[in-house]
Image (cartoon, rainbow, N blue to C red):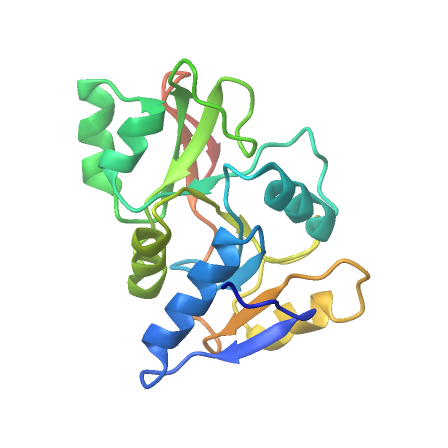
Length: 202
């Protein structure tokens, strides 16, 4: 039976409890919960990208315009090909960039419904972060890949900034995985492969 989480349940990640934390995070995501997790760029706000209720809560937590789509994390190129139209040329670009810090916009396959997507397009990335990749493999579904901050602020690499951002909010994440401060970096580059490789975010 999945654990019931209190508001801002915080777990410190260490080498000793890694597997336990993975299972707790996977259970939370499978139960329509939201999880703040370290990534290869900044702290991210994760939810099951196929779950309407979980995705709706991401928008509320971030106070984000619901008309703006959410990027999505996947465990592999094969997982991307299961939901998006990937041409041979696209596949070469994905293989050159993934795992890594480049998000690609692709067309959704007909019949695929992902609430985090924008109409018939979806922004996908396979991150280069061991813990996060193991979590993605464990849940075996795409998760939201948006930064853990209120719209217009952040993003954050320091856990104290993440916690301060949400602790006074009425709508808070369900679970926070505290991996300490992350190396200074920028959010991922976004490239639209459906529009002549247009750079949406450098």
